[in-house]
Structure formats: C-alpha cells, structure tokens
Length: 423
Image (cartoon, rainbow, N blue to C red; front, side, top):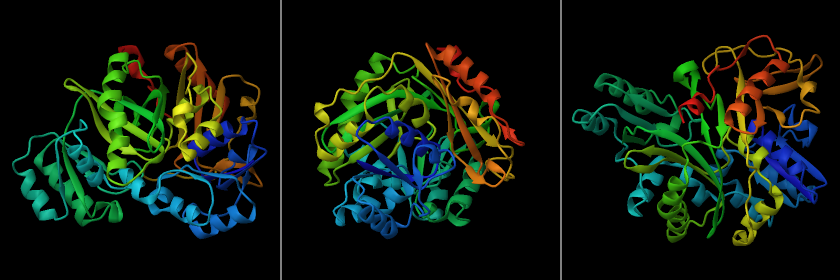
C-alpha cells in the first residue's frame, strides 16, 4: 500500500520510521517532510495547510492511507476535505479536533461529563477577565483558547503577572487569534504525565505513558517550548492511576465526544496532573505528542498500520496493543537561543553514526538538505532517543548518544529525566 504522512517534524519522522517497518507498505510520501524523513519517504513540497493540493496529490498518486501528524491541519478540517474526496485518512474530523483546538470547549466538555479537571472560567472580554483576577487565588494559570505551538499557557504567581498575562494574550494578541478567548484555571500541583491513545470513535486503547520537559533550561527554568525531551514510561503512572483514569477519564472522554455528536477517530493525547485528590486532565491534544511520539513509538510492538486502519474502520476492540518491557529517553538538540531568537543553517555532522546502532534513534525536527549537507533549520533540530532496560539505563544511553552528532550552536538540557531519580 501507499501511505502519505502530513507534517515536517520529529513526530512525523518517528511515524515515518514506524510505518516503514510495516510489511504491507511499499511506498511512503511525506508532505512537506524534512531531511531525516527522506530516508523512509519521498518528500513532497506541499504545505500541511494546503488541503486541496494534498487531497489532489493523494488522489493522483492513489494513496491508500493518509496519516495527519500535526494539530493545525486537523483543527482546520483536513480530514473532512479528504473524506469528501473519498480518501482514507487517519485523524479526527474538524468537529472532533476541537478537543484540542479550543481549550474552552474541552473544559466545558469535562465539566458537563464530570471528567476530573481544574476549576476554571472562560473569558472573551479582557475587562471581565481582569475583574475576575481581583478576587482569584494565586498562583493561577492563563491559557489562550486556541493553538499556540504548546506555548500559550502562562503560570502567574501574582496579580500583576496575571494582569500582564491578560494583556499579552487578549490585547497584544501574542498568540494571534488563539487569544480571542482565554481560560483562567486554578493552579494544580503534582506530577505531570502524558498518555497517548488510539481511538476508533467507540473503543480506546492507551499507549505507554511518557513525561515531557517543556521549559527551555535546566531545572525547569526559562520559557515554555514545544518540548526539550521526554521519557517513557513514567514511574509515577502506577496501576492505581491507570485504573482510575480508565474508569473516570479515558473512556469517559470518548463517550462524551460521541454523545456530543463529535465522534473521535484518531489519537487522543491526555495531559494529566497527578494531584493529591487524584489524576486530573490538564489538556487534550488530538494527535501524537512531539517529542512523546519519539519515545512511545520505538517501544510499540504492534504494526502501526494495522492499529491505524482499525481506528479508521471502527475495529479497535479487536486489537491487542502491546509495548516492550523497557524504557526510552529522548533529549532534544536545539539551536542556542530557542525558543526566542536563534541562527540556523549550520551543518550537522555525525548523523550516519546512528545507522546500525540498535535501540538508538535520531529523529529530525528542524533540518534541511543543502549542497553543504544537512543543516539546522529550526529551533528544535534533532530528537536523540535511546532505549534501555530501565529508565536510568535509557537516560545514560541517550546522553551518550547526543555526543555522536554535532552542529555549531547545539544546545540541550542536561537534566531530562531528572524525575527518574525521585521515583
């Protein structure tokens, strides 16, 4: 079969690598792709938001299945466009992708169906938001309603910080139209855990747990980023937590969306906070996490195409989803200065060293092929993933592996997986 993957980051590289291992697949395309994805796929110069062009390409090349990696096209309705053309596509339709596309929608859904989450209020008027903050308890969390590359969340410790936050989100439109509506939420404390899941509209199958590191600098300092590294599984995601989430969160979310007439097929990413009162939902995403996909997919035993097709066909209940009994750690190599200002165009050396290394992977996030060779082309450049028998072993392997690859302004956090020592 022929498969088209939509996206250009480390997540899509991990998906392409996993799809390439499926015996039923003989041709992979990726639009627009990157220099690393080229190893497994023919990269097509069509942007992820060019829905009509992508659908035309899929028809012309007789693509059997399209996998949408990114949030923007899903929220924008790419699945509806493909389905209208009679094309098989994996991902939620526009009316279901709103689960990620609008934080106000997802908070209201959780309230209506008693899915545990932080107390909150939604605001469309900045004046009302400011008035509400006068009587609020701090710290408090401000969230831009729409998509903001994982950066539209501000934790405010004082009233002044919160006022400034309202100004930057709602008035200065720091995150564009994502800030037209804003959610003000109680600040939750506890361990953060990410759980990805496959969903076919009725049935949900959860993947192994992971934990991301959002802040740019060591010790969780600096600005929020798209993610500086991750590890899987989370030692804090116990059997008790899993049991609670299965009972009150996972299936409840799938059923809630179905009840609302918004059948969800695709990936639901559950961002959880393990609070003293029990697990609560921090956020939903409607696709694989990045860099979570880079530690979860290498540990997945199943043929990804079989699982994806079961989601499309509504037969996920027949799938036994299995993961290896080991661990994986991913350290993101970024450009110095990310996520604010950084230079790009530096030649990357050492990529070939990963070729025959079992259990070691280098996933490209922001790279480009030029006459000089493969060069840096983004803030997050590479995700270096290593497996190990346990988390400490995998972490040691990942930090050894980042020495194999070099570029001029290489920057990374030294403490990815620090929570492993606290378990």
